[in-house]
Amino acid sequence: MLEKLLLNHYEAAAVILSGIGLTNLLLQRNLIKKIIGLNIMDTAVYLFLAAKGYVEGRAAPILIENGSGGWLTSSALYVNPVPAGLVLTGIVVSVSVTAFALALTLKLYESYGTLNIDEALLKMTEEQEQLEAVIEEADEEVLS
Amino acid sequence: MNEELKNIWRAFFNWVMGNGPRPENEVIPPEPPPDLPFTQKPHDKYTRFHEATLKERYNQWLEIHGLHIFAILYTGLSVLTCIVIVSLLLATVAELPPFGHERNPANNEVIRRYVEHGGHETGAQNIVAGLILDYRAFDTFGESAVLFTAAVSVLMLLGASRRNKTDTHSLPSSNAMDAYSIHAPPMRHHTFRKDDVILRAVASLSIPVILMMGCVVVINGHLSPGGGFSGGAILSTALILCANAYGFERVHEFFNERTFIVSSSTALMIYALSKGYSFFTGANHIHSVIPKGTIGNILSGGLILPLNICVGLIVAGTLYGFYALFSEGDM
Image 1 (cartoon, each protein chain N blue to C red):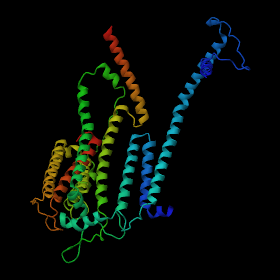
Image 2: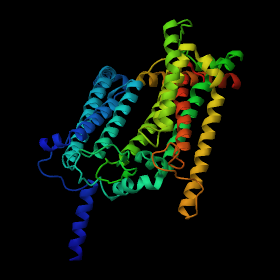
Image 3: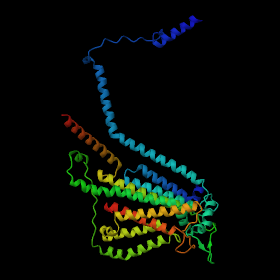
């Protein structure tokens, strides 16, 4: 099995990277670090796709001139162009999701003063209790 | 027969109801003493006291150690989950076909078709550009729309808050609102050095070069590596450098929220309409007026060049918008 893993070492590295990202996502309590873990997982996917598209000894998929005004279009000359397009989609979606998540994190930090998700939750419950107390007081005033 | 059954049934019924004959060696407990008043029950009180202290001690123990134990359990379980997932995936990777071999199942007739007919069908020298902006152009349109949506939602989240904050300051705050906002929002602090000579000199030299580089990458997207996404990212770095060297007000003069929305929406509309026309004519075998051009010329590849410019505009605006919104809170 180890020999086979060494043969596919790019894919193995991608899988290990995605495991690191998942562990980060589960264990970190800091939201920014959680987002970094998500990005590590994304990067692992790009590495995997790029590794699957590579063919030994072939050129990038940009047509080469054949010297007499024509183009070499034999498929035995170029690597797989499809993973490049798929990675492009992945990068764009990852950038969008990261930006949106960071914006939400910034809002959380502005209202609670912390990036730690546990502390933020504690403060949220505290705030909720205070708000309920205020509402009860107002109700009593109205009733009396 | 009937009598016997009835007897057995009666015995069973009695046994179930607890009235049956007792086994011989059963010890009959003595009658409990008559109930004493509550105050004269020392034994019961003692156990109650013990129970209460036990409960209290358990609660205290839970308060001190419960979170700790939960944290240890959570950590252990998540590490275990990750190890299991990674080992399963590694076992799968070990069964994959060898890396970079030309006979791999991924290099099938789809790839052959794209490479052999892509140049002739799309008119693009760069097969990836032909793939993402001609064969799979709706996919790229979706990507641009996703990017634009993300930029608009970040603008909504961060830009609107700034405006609302100035609004709420002018309003008299009610009692309930004070109680709700117990934690004062920490503000972002920014100090721009207005007279950074080195940065400005370097920026004035490099911004034109970066802009030119970005334009070259966008316009040559169908001839060489690059295209709308990478070229747009390069263009946005020029904007970000300009904002850092000369201040956001300088960029605001020619690129603000309104320009961003108008340019991105126009680019998306042009993309959707032109590619929709191209797909409609292609699918119905109608003659399209868009010329393909000869491979290798700058004006070739049909719609790929204008679509690359559209995507480049959206990406440049979006990435600069992200930077401006996150660092300044406004665009």
